[in-house]
Amino acid sequence: MDELIQKAKQKNPDAFEELIRLHMQSMYKVAKAYLSSDEDVADAIQETIITCYEKISYLKNNAYFKTWMIKILMSKCCNILRNKKMMDSLEEPTEQPIFDRSFEELEWKEVIQLLDEKYRMVMVLYYIEGFRTGEISQILDMNENTVRTRLKRGREELRSIYLNDKRREKSNGRKKSMARKAAGRRRNTGNCISKSGTGF
Image (cartoon, rainbow, N blue to C red):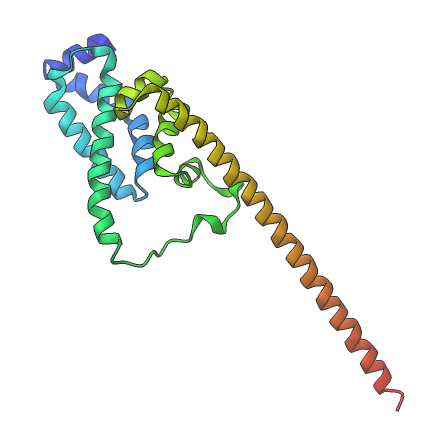
């Protein structure tokens, strides 16, 4: 990897293309944790690739290439989000709310979207991308203890979401059961009235 990065620093297009190929899945997962639109994800990744190509010669330590690249990507995602929030505030949401489905039916990217934004990215970087807390603190420009705290609270929030989902499912199940029983009683009452009517 170090040799590949060194060649990319010398503007070797094949080396840079291979670097991007090796990290494309990671970039997609991180961008998707921020952005819901595939078009926005593609834009963020494309802008990141361009910036990385232009700035890679300034990377001092090759071992931190992925950390450096992800930090650039997150900055691009934030820029897109800022622009979209101004536009989205004028439009009504058209997508089905994710809470209309059970927790188990959601894909990982949808589950991540359920988290508070301040916990979301540390969870993605730690559990999905495998960064250590020290690396995450560099990417997010925050104290390592803060990273650990957000990881803990992110896990707690996911657990709370899961338990609330289970309670909602049980509640819906009880309501359906009560509705079936009520419908059965109405049918029985109707049959009794019908039978009584035939005796006159």
